[in-house]
Image: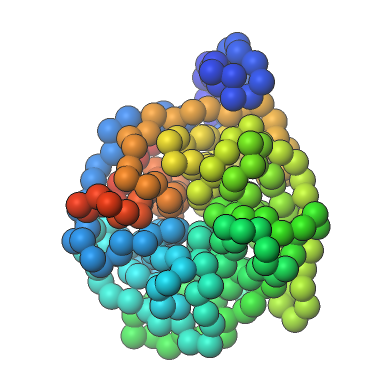
Length: 291
């Protein structure tokens, strides 16, 4: 624990200015200039989500969105493509984010793939796929669970999935509203029927493209195209209580061509970001380390 002085969105993002002394679980000090690992153009041009691998050291999993196969890319921290992992039996309608962490079986790391993109807000159902994280690219993919859900208040476009490692609950943040909306799928999620994602509150952000909760559950990140926002999570707080509260902080962030993905590393020592290539000549895997 450390005591720090937070400026609570002096620009008015949280509805007011001012400073407050708070005791936070983690450290809001991240490097302002990330380390950058270049990625060869054409290999991963449609990145939409990433998760630091818990089973293959020094690598992140990257998913791409609609128009790409149902597969995961395994990318080294140095930006080299180690290979791709085909995921049989499922489709990529519009994969927009992913997470890694605990699931049904104790001691097993799972990958969660959020097929939640819906630009026209017309999908009556969305899906989060869950599978045990492979230990290599040659390992057979096991059962892929299908967590189908609908929003309690009608279709939404979303690009952000959060996995709470403390409870195994899942959270979705919508994208395009002037104040994005937070939805909750409590554990254990039903894999044979359609779940209902309960509305839990609004956040004073828009165009949220990705998010991540630290492996210890004490820090939360949300990313937009132009910024990265940090919430500490106090002991005993739910994710709703942390996010809808006022203890948030805008981190220094270097703009990317179309910044889509963010994820803590598996040790919680910092976070990665990755962009869609768009019209840029190339993109980089970026890492912001805790100071």
